[in-house]
Length: 456
Image: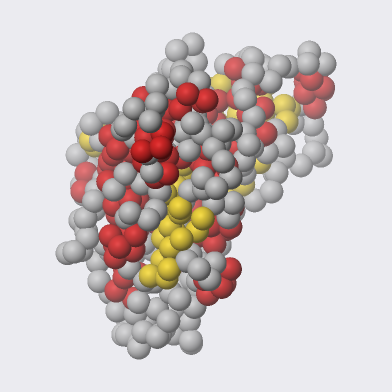
């Protein structure tokens, strides 16, 4: 990077990239020294490309519309049509590899919102080009991919964020502040649940093949996954749209879809990023080598973290629920929506919703007594989930769910899927990503083999 006393010789892109790298290396330096959103003129906008422009990707792109959306990629032009229409000046692509190669000099940052099985290969290519990267949850399909992305982002000094939007919310912050304040004492048990799956699971692979629609590039949609023919039955594809979540080759099931949201408040407040689970067990209803089960319960065991005691964390999906809390008043409902969490402490319990929202200490009398103490808000509040990432790309502080945080969270989620798929207890050496009790086939699932032509 050229000396800061000669700004006229810095291109806009050099400035943004250099500022973000400086911020990553010297986070205590004031923002006005590094540059950033507080003193960057409105004309200094990020040039953003997006991989996956339909569905959830469209929402992420629109959340960043304050910047320049210069290139859009989607393998299904019909599904992406609404986003294409909203950004008519953006160049359109089907293959993200060609887009990144052609637009490398024109873009600063990349949004990845493909199905789960393509997250890592797309995000890694962007990161290795030195592009800031926002990737939807779960960060990756495999455990080893999450570790690789986290390390690559550090190496290339790029600003990152995972799409668990609740991490920017008020609820997750209140949970952290109350737990750290000792409001419910020592937490030794957490239960989280979701009503997912809301798509087909416990089904067999369809037979035969069908013509691929003109609007879809099926081979690019498969990406690194093993080849299988496109097929339709009764005019519908069993893989598209959205229902890919239930297939092992493409999705990550109820855990992958929801746990990065539902677990976030507990993962943050109980400092689970500081350790790895030592074991994980799963029980399930149905399931096969093609699709996830109808329902599952997964139990993780964590060691102590600082002054926090060992923790048992239990996940429930498919409509299964933990027992009703004994301390809850008779007749009171305790299910905040389709997903939520229950913290069990030595001095009380706490319930919150899917994104950590609407936290409540139970029983209600204890909640009211605690509020009278006027608990302090010790965490800074967020300018907004996507805005955090935009600010970080321009030299601001790292986004809240940057990959140093989101990577370990994703690893934990995917470890649960490892137990679900094998049906065995997994003893886990997290530091080395090793299954230590020789469960058949488990270690091979930590990192799948990619189809020829695809790699990290």
